[in-house]
Image 1 (cartoon, rainbow, N blue to C red):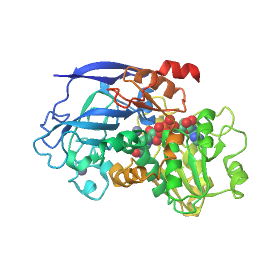
Image 2 (cartoon, rainbow, N blue to C red; image 1 turned 60 degrees about the vertical axis):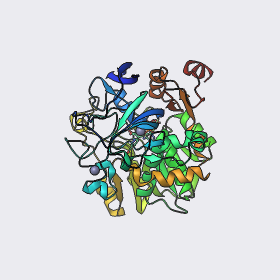
Image 3 (cartoon, rainbow, N blue to C red; image 1 turned 120 degrees about the vertical axis):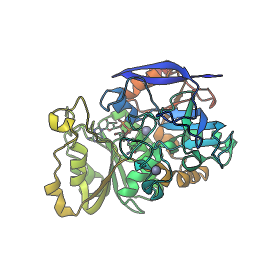
Image 4 (cartoon, rainbow, N blue to C red; image 1 turned 30 degrees about the horizontal axis):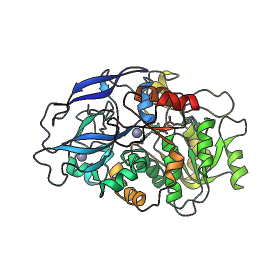
Length: 407
Ligand SMILES: NC(=O)c1ccc[n+]([C@@H]2O[C@H](COP(=O)([O-])OP(=O)(O)OC[C@H]3O[C@@H](n4cnc5c(N)ncnc54)[C@H](O)[C@@H]3O)[C@@H](O)[C@H]2O)c1
Ligand SMILES: [Zn+2]
Ligand SMILES: [Zn+2]
């Protein structure tokens, strides 16, 4: 029987490829999962959320297998799986969800009550229920009939794989960020963060019909990718305040909707600003108009070992709420319930409505061996979205070192 090579988190900035046993249809607590399937990974992406773990800022046990952005082919099916078949090509939502609890039934698959015995929230490759990640050759997926999104045609799916690969997380997440911020036809939108989630949010805002879409970051290479793809940009490391930069683009100092695609590792504003976890939310309180909406897909957490002080270590941040309250603000955070959006976004991709995603995501496909270096480049702020192809099935792998040298 095949083994299973996988990317393991060993400690801060220390990953290794480990040789594991081929996965079994059992859950992390050893209970048989007849409702599950085994997948052969086709693509599995590296995410900013993995980076929080990689940097040692989101607690995770040593030996945990990373990877929650998974797309694969079903190679084994449990006894109780009725509709998913061997050979199906599927996208795996990063949320592990049972489909049976109150929250799953209310389309809140991000807070499933059964997938994690510690609290209602589970995901692959996180310290959230012990589910093994998919940056590997194979993985087990429970509750397969409910969870998996099957692509209707395998050849068509492989042709579009560098768009469909984002359905497991960042595309629904960026879209969700826009939806909870109230983005609709004609909205003006400010998206904080030009990482992969911010870039997916920009593409989502365009799909939703937003008018001006402004993306902010301090990373110039990432801003250049966003600008080239046709969006407005602001550089938050400039001395010019954020509202002034927005005014220079829109003629007014406020936007209709704001989306935080940064999270707790946020930098403050202006030249040489250090980290300030409340910078983005406070910035959005300021630049989102009276009555506007704010979406917060960026992760906030208690347990950041490198937080600046005890309060922030506990996930408690100084927010300008007293100043913002008069604006009737609405702000919604949390993980994205991927299944709420992924089918519709798949159809949008397959019908050519999201072709612009390719430019703005700026993907590079790498081998499993190169995944460890991809983590390093991504940590250094690379403008690429790294997509790992563990079995070399996309035909799109480029060696990482050569690509880095060419940069
Ligand atoms: N809610 C969810 O379901 C979900 C899903 C996926 C990712 N996430 C989270 O979304 C966030 C973004 O993910 P990513 O992969 O794009 O991460 P990333 O780290 O690659 O990108 C974050 C970007 O924010 C920039 N930034 C820092 N301070 C800023 C500021 N004040 N204003 C504007 N930009 C600033 C950084 O330079 C960086 O380019 C992370 O926190 C990630 O964990 C959440
Ligand atoms: Zn992710
Ligand atoms: Zn559930």
